[in-house]
Image (tube, rainbow, N blue to C red; front, side, top):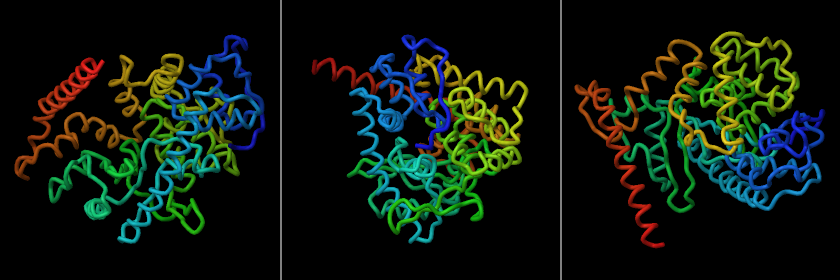
Length: 402
């Protein structure tokens, strides 16, 4: 964790402290003292930490402060550290394999970001491994992954020609799984459609990071990383406080307190996304804004903040966005609000008419690819119906077993 410099104070009485407040205090890079965990329901604290995928970070901060770590939270944290350790080995192996095959690759988020932001690859939880390649290398990367035994989940089979090009335009990543370890890989060829420049940055914007003795990986440099993280988090309504903690840690660890990162984001069209990150980090972590920061004004930033405050705290901070009534429109609205320019907003809207899942599911000849938007709704209904039927079968099987 980053070096402590200032205390966090809660506006709530100690006996009324919420689990979300304690999680925020544990994630704040400037915190010196923490509220007493005895004032918080331990079950709620564990649920909030699990929902925001920060169990290892929260447990480490409590241990650092000399406070007891509730049993449920301790188990979650240990599980997160074990997963991170497995991901570390797999991420290094995958990066080296693709590089040997002549494919430049950037390791995103996960263990690399954990090292960059928190000084250890085992503190930041991640569901999967994220790698970024160039669009022209996608087919070759799929072939290398298949030879190494990775199953291609989405699209379920390799694509070629015009269909591959259309899939890469409609989607920004493919999904792969190692059948033995069950590790999941997202292979990206775009960072985020809401960015003005979503493709792999130029070499000057990248950095080399040592994740193990003699084993380095290519990662985003600080300025590109800050812009990407802010855009990714804001475009998802800051649904996980983990994403905000990443940004806050990077700002706090920066020699100039984030001045260059903020200037770069502002100049690259990320004023709304990066501005929301800075404002929320002030509110939740008491983090001072970067030098030169001017708070954005207007309806767009106001709506992004309004969404984020409600999504993050839903169900006392323990409710997933997918279970809320606003799950669909909230994320779509957030993406439209933070897009850097009209091209980004057009890309967001294009997803409503053209989906990678449809292209992977139905093979149309090149002369008929214009039919994919027409088939969008019927195919979506078909997928939802099949998913509902599978869920019913699982529930019936469970009831029968009981």
